[in-house]
Image (tube, rainbow, N blue to C red):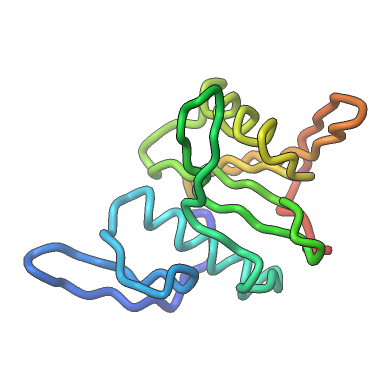
Length: 144
């Protein structure tokens, strides 16, 4: 994992391994994608000082009459989307299709930043929606 270790609560219940999600405040199935999602959430909260109260996990959105879910959505202090994150399992390579997926979500959301991560590789982009432009940035955006 190319993110700091996290202090997390893991349990085994009815033969299944679960991890406590600090945003949803409940245990969820520990899948490889969830492991990446929880590392990113912890990184945003504990390393980058993102307010926990402004982070949503697996929030719904509509695109062309289809119901979709963004893995992580961070709002700014004015309740507008700031960062949308698409998480993949560590064994899934980040492809153009993955970048397209987060871009499609962001067309609906209008976040200033979007990110794709498999826990090992992270791509962050900044959007200028007015000009219709996007540029890659070198690090996680600082929360404003």
